[in-house]
Image (cartoon, rainbow, N blue to C red; front, top):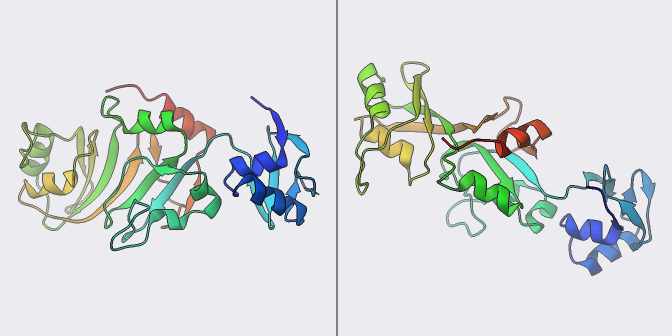
Length: 241
């Protein structure tokens, strides 16, 4: 629902700094609103379809942030990284400031689809084990895959420190060395451990789908974009498995 608030509060809510810092941005002619210069930090605007620029960069007001990112290899899904850069360094500073969070993590050498948001309810829904949101991984195996291995993955394999065998929801052979494996859990190194339990080895791993949302082919490594209304609807209307 649209509301009318000052441009200072708009900028603050969108991650452009403290209220004071946002006031200074406006007073220093760094901001336009709906195509017009704005130098009054207390000027009020309706938030619906509100477009603005900060230092020439275009933005649209969004009550909450819902993003997707195509994670490259050798990035960590953490603010406090150990060996590699953070995936958050791939985002504009304003989005990091408004505290968007990765919904689930990928290992530093795993690539592909990551969703991010600052909406706690949305994050919980997609990451909570009780919802079991399916995720599809493209798995590059070291050795050729045979029907027996696929059957084992579907029937369930026993992993160390797990009380019961773990099975893939689906497993499709794409080529002699590539699988599309669907999981609804997020255990530590799960895909790699399941494949290893099958006397094979993962040489490359890419997440290509979460729920009904697929990683777009035109989203390059390291690029991000806002989720569309349709994608958001698909994710928020996912039913429990």
